[in-house]
Length: 168
Figure 1 (spheres, rainbow, N blue to C red):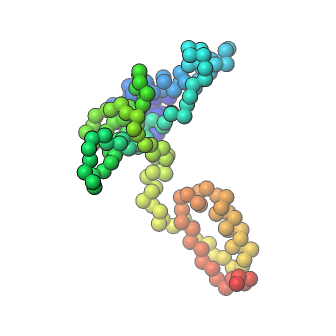
Figure 2: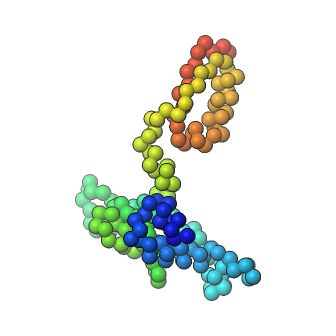
Figure 3: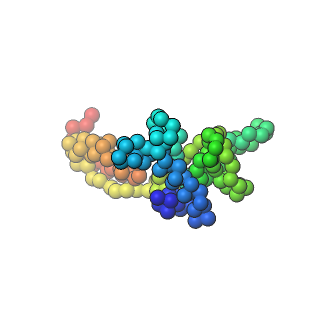
């Protein structure tokens, strides 16, 4: 599990211990003990764990700066999510500016998959070109675009309309 977590966002291998700690934390919160039908957390504390705070290991995050800031100074700094503190609420984050790990609650996460975040600059890339000759073809294409996530999220569709009959 830890190796996969490191590979997902190409997190440097030097953070292997953070990945293992996070994998243990998650497995205690989520995995069931089959005979009892409960997680380790439920057995220890008597109630189901809250998992809304769980985040994707290695994702990009933004830590709120706490000191007094100038009017035009950035309010946050870029970071890399590395897990959860042992005895407090919050998150362990590598601050990329200083290369130090901090524990904080004031974090915003960018959990988009690494492929999606890499393609943010490719918005103008053309996916395919389609020649539309009648209204029925146009309607079918528009329905396809609405229901096909790949077309909606990843590629710009170029449509050439030629002598369309039935449009007003």
